[in-house]
Image (cartoon, rainbow, N blue to C red; front, side, top):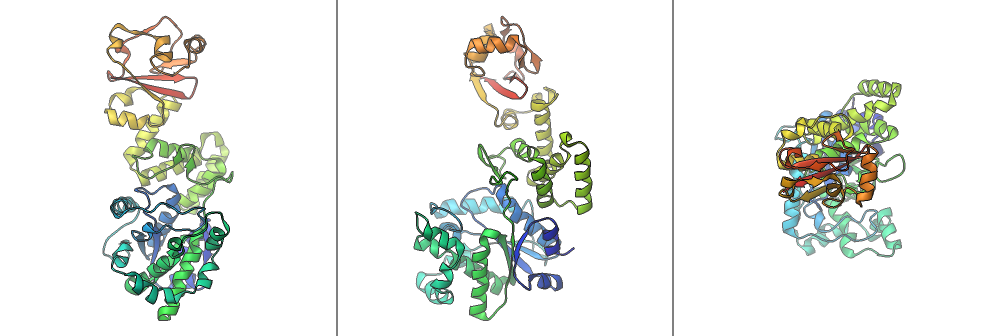
Length: 427
């Protein structure tokens, strides 16, 4: 199956320049996607483009990942409502290095014909002075052409306007395409559908400067079935960096997808074949409550992003918090691993010395921690059988909790109701 056919059946393809599919069918070419280094981690919103490069490489072509060390200093105005803060060079260099490490988990890098390559546009812009740029690049594209782009029009019509700095962004991205076309034989630029205007500017620059021909492919912007932005949760973005979003929370993000979203996303974010997906979806539809699609999706993308070990830990944590999982897996973890496992679970700290004499359970739940807002609320729920400590139901309001109750001599795990967990740390 060709690259374009792969994108098409997976529901990823949005726009394609005439002649692109024919080129990719008859030739093995290099193609690139740009990644904005305004942060030190990619998030799940970048996964569509990462998967595009994976499919490009699997089809025998050479994927080029451009990390925008130069364009990151400008900020892409495409469909943004306001100008972003500019970053200093030190911060950008740190971010670029982090993104390189993350992309290397998904793509096969090397010096071979089909191996992925990473470039940084700062390398060719750092010695490009302003006069040379406006003379050699600015003359290639008219202001009328630049202002005709929807991304520019929307900003000009908005309350915040558009600075000259951001206005020049499409020239810089356009020159990236020209530079990679000329020096790295990149004949195709890919990206999200919001990048179409910038990509076409690059192909136009190649035509006007060297009478060359370049091509473009864009993918659909992914949204949730309810219309909300993909990759956003109540706590913010879902990051690929495990320090920003733990593997457990990452796994849960995919596991909690609706049936409609999961059936769509498993085509986009895994490499499973059509036959495999049809079988998974058919199995899911026979017993939707078992969430077969969600589990297959969450497993695949968690292993790909993190590791098999991280996935297995996410499973054990999920079983503990939401099923009948044992406390045993906690006893084998060090402190940092426990904190990772309970990332997102409310945590409280108490003085370990107080547990020598013991603490009344109601005091522990309402005074020493904020599991309950009052002792009265704690007493009511405890006598009703709605409170567990370390996976054991409590019902005695006079019960004393002491150091012998600690897991690993450090932790108490409180469960309120069916799904509300709290971690109490004794220090």
